Length: 216
Picture 1 (cartoon, rainbow, N blue to C red):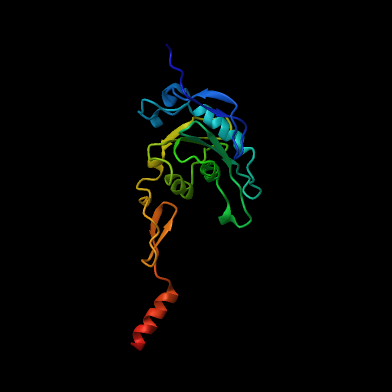
Picture 2 (picture 1 turned 60 degrees about the vertical axis):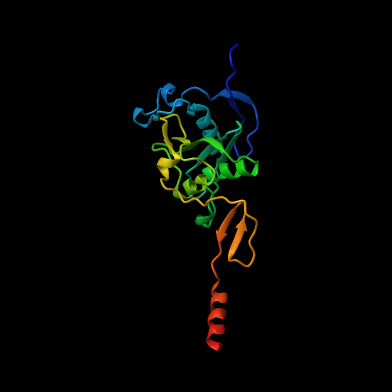
């Protein structure tokens, strides 16, 4: 009996991807894709097809809000459970508040309950493909493994599909060790989510401590 292969389902673009049709994701992406640069091929025996992911990313790029840079980017993030989440860059007059497509897709995925991911595709640029910025790489590292493949290509069909991994883009990523410990009160530690983070003493507390020691 022939075993049915798993796939993911995609429809349209934007932050709310809905099921439409099943696409095969089990065959070797970099060996089967004819236009992938040979130097960027990965040796993993089980990889993903980049074309459906990039098609979703390119569709998402059409929803980009980029009146200042005119540089539209789309991203498609594949969760382990087969759901596909897409995002587009959303610019802001205060440039530092601009949200990249990769983070938009990740925020949509996490908001929908996804926590583990298999692959990311990014579509941007007309001649040179856009890659995730440093902030996006760090945010992705919060949920994605170093070995997760990242495909990137231009918004059109020109040029090769390039592939790398999160670990190559961000070696030695900054990560905190998750903890299930309960919130500790009065010990200088604050529980945020499932991570215990050291809370430094504030300047006001420091001044009060120095003043108290002076009067002692």
